[in-house]
Image (cartoon, rainbow, N blue to C red; front, top):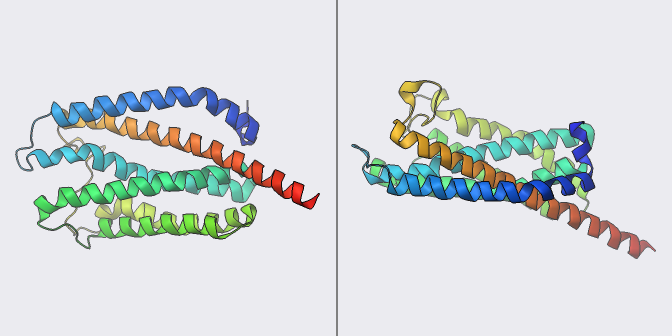
Length: 242
């Protein structure tokens, strides 16, 4: 079985119809367990107090904000190289979800940062690159809306996605690039000394799993909607020509 079989819209819809309920229920289960565990059954941090618990929303949403754009990059490259419409529509479907994740990350970061830094916002390298990433999300969605021809829109948004990927990577590695700024280092790292304590770490992993599954479920659902909308537009155009 080839992965490219799922570039067929009918095959994609049939497969995701089967998978979507399982992914959705798993996402709900992970989110409920992770958030309840994290907010109600973990202690306050000895330095940050109860504000540390916003990590269960901030870190997963920030990870998904970045990885959503990287997923869009991969599907955009597939469109450029292979011209598979499902890949272009999957990138289009992921953009509003990624933008929402970016808003959640920015908002929770401000709420977390205010008591820690004494300010809601600082022009920190990671915060600034995250804000620019959000603007790229808005520009990407606006470009799709502004162009009537789907193939032309897919071409131009794919180019925009390539450019925006620079800021997706910057927002992920800004703390490593610049040894300055208020933002802390990574909460999850291969270096055990940089990881949060286990009492926070394990519920955080469950929350991350929930956010990943939620993203997958929403992208599947929105891609199905985009495929059906494209098919409807093509039928209407054919009727008008007839």
